[in-house]
Image 1 (cartoon, rainbow, N blue to C red):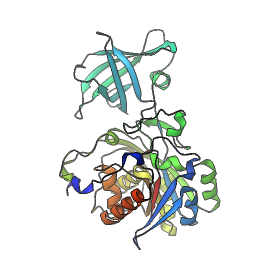
Image 2: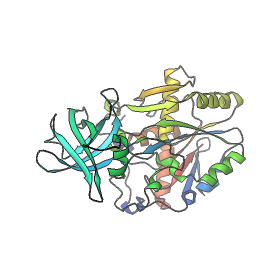
Image 3: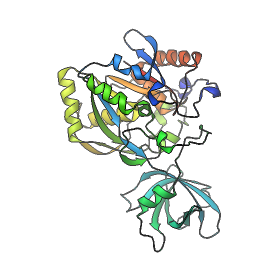
Length: 354
């Protein structure tokens, strides 16, 4: 399977630069896999396509202000660090990161982070090792006489890590969070969930739709295109996931009662399918990591429908939705979306695949 078969041309003006208001006024392209038909709706119409007894599973991970701007202690040279995943296996306050410029940051290099508007806050760091992906594992520590923890300092000193294709300044950082984001740890937002409002969630509950939450902290692969031509040669980076016992019970109850499990986003999809893969098709509580790479030909075990945004060309996410809906139908949907001037990527419109 060639990654060049999952490429497409997108007019740059269709890349959404700012979030739409209200959240659920975004457009929704409804894809029916049985009939291969498309419908143009608004996200607030979602309840018309769900039934009592259906279960939405959403990712409750919260984006941390993972972009840190600092300097090298030895030279004073500027450095930018993007936090990708906490590495508790190496030690407390250790993070896998992308660094820029990275070429001269050797093991043992020391970094300092501060903020002009917050003169009393400072964070120190030491480069521990290189990573396979060309990043660094860094150990952070509060500067002298700091009463705050490393996590609290990152929250205050960090900047929201918007994707490189977004060039506008985000005036409200909460618009890059879902309304149900609860557990901090992601380097990027699980964007399919950005369309939900508290009012829409309440409306769905009144219709008899249940809502459960899983956690996947979005990490390195969000920032990495598939760079090899043969898809089977691509190596997925590990991401931390959690599915708790109450949610596992909700999913099993829904399946036994004939309801549909609807994944909100590719991250929720990967949690559910990863856990089912670990437990021979059953959904059980799980906390650990996954490297699941879903490509066309994959046999889905849990998910019956999904909500997702429009994804970048040549990406693992485009491969995943092509696996779920079929490559030809996704190509048809994307061409229709381009023709109808849908908004693409993180702040863009959504699709519901039934």
